[in-house]
Length: 148
Image (cartoon, rainbow, N blue to C red; front, side, top):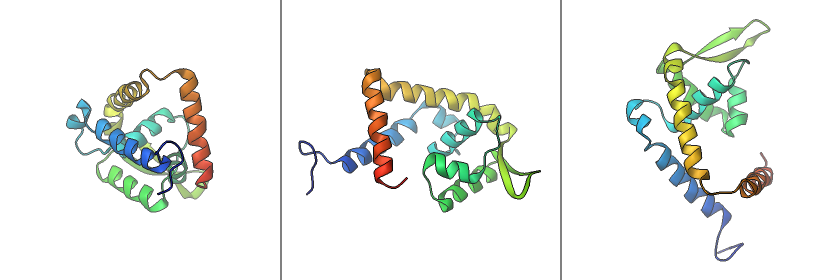
């Protein structure tokens, strides 16, 4: 098997950490309170909340989260079905519909943002700023290598 560094494979390490991240994120206390919202949906609600001053479209989410159009469509349909978002036309292009958080989502956005903050603090604990900068540089290069 192809190994780059001391019996380690980059893809395997990323996949393993992804599984641990997902499991940890979904075990946070708020997950029990907001059972109908998946981890990815929480990230999207958080993103929409953080960017509420501008129009966000499905394509923006696809790019931000590196997901395919079909994946984004499915997530947005569920968010819409659960009354967490609406899609509203914009005056400057009849083909586009911006994604807007509903009052139900606005009511839980602070809790979701706090959950994300706690999660981020946990996973970056005891990692120096310099090491985090290297981590983000390496992750960006991996994205480039994968054609993102």
